[in-house]
Length: 454
Image 1 (cartoon, rainbow, N blue to C red):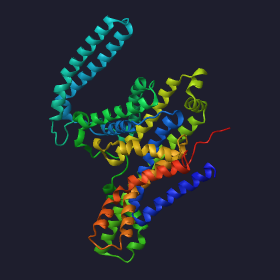
Image 2 (image 1 turned 120 degrees about the vertical axis):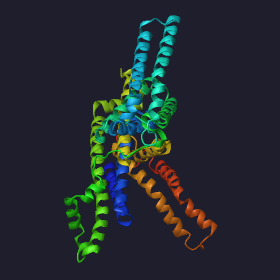
Image 3 (image 1 turned 45 degrees about the vertical axis):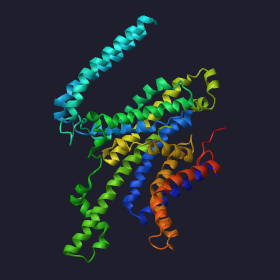
Image 4 (image 1 turned 180 degrees about the vertical axis):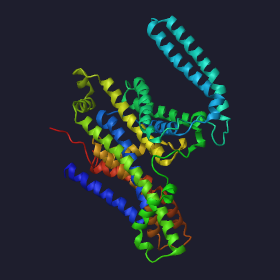
């Protein structure tokens, strides 16, 4: 079976599965799963660029997604005037001090010959810069975090439309990837994996503990939306008229309070579906743009060069290719896409929750998506994003239904029955491993494997 037919059948199956959720559970849930599938697919594309194109083993995906989430908050939330008055200027002074320290240290390192004098000068510059930075930073943090800490306690953001945070999240992640790549891309693949995981944990730890910047574990709630609010739709005349036409059969023959009750319920349901459809349109647009760019890049001379480097670094280097430079390039591109996906996810959630960034969700699952879909194949990564997230979401209700059905013959209160039903939520972990084992056994290159042109 060729890849085109496989892709058609696989995506048709996913469409039917989402329709089934809409028919038997709710359309709001189906659209929520769809939105999360799209975001997961974007993140999987970023990892596929790194692993499928260049063979870079990055398990720090969580950190880049977290930077995208932080960008969504920093761009969209309004600035907190009292916090800025209390310590904003000192934060700026400490930032200037940090930048100046880095610049002076770089100049010292480049212009003083290697030896004891350079080492001594570096120590003096770094220690002096650190002390000056902390002199402004520490009192500023205390003042900011004590400013109405129950509601704010942080500086806030720029108050701009949140959709602008998506490219900003990509820039944040790309900047971090550049710094990380300059340090670790010369390492062997296993050391690269350890380094990226450690750095991602540092990023998440900063988001959790720097309350003055992100409110830490207190979270930032109520981020603005790029789509209408349900209450606004329910109160608008055009939407009410649209719902009355769509639900004409349900409203037929009803008058007074009965009609108002049915119409109110219909408005609530329709507004939720409409908002999720708006999100789906925005997310799908981003996915299509990134997919188009990925396909064009993969089919270009650059893409052929990256595959050559992936397959045989020594031979590519012997042909004059800058292997480390190209690795840095693809590492930055893949991380930027993960940052965009992280900003999109925070936009959908409407809040920044640093404690939600866990490796199980933002590293393990994304890697499973790439492996199951087919590394090196862009459509395979998207398919993996849809399939794995759908199974991850629906495994718990399906497991509960299955265990209830299988234990239906047991009497109520039976210890074995209660244990099986209560443990059904863990079916998702079992299913992830089971799907991965099946794919590795019967389709080791993924459902949609990479095809090489001959």
